[in-house]
Length: 76
Ligand code: FES
Image (cartoon, rainbow, N blue to C red; front, side, top):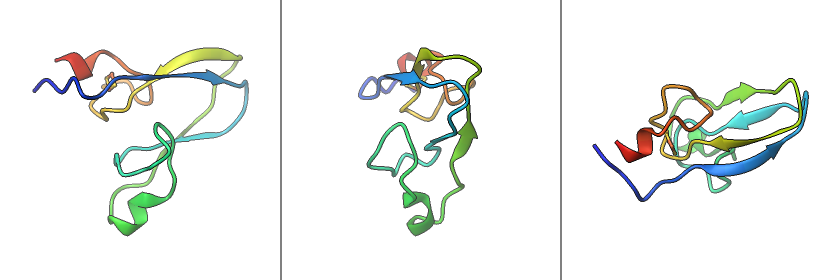
């Protein structure tokens, strides 16, 4: 199902910093977790880090097969 209301967010990721990607879509701090999953009884965030400073496009539609990164699924 296409949902073009979502698009990835470009983020400058810092080497070795710990990030928490929102998996439940309720966070007000997309694409990152703000703890809202607890109130909605949803699964927790996905923790990740990167090996080098880089810009990445993080998924906001939550349908990517390569979380936390956008894989174009928001266009399908
Ligand atoms: S925003 Fe692109 S796959 Fe989710």
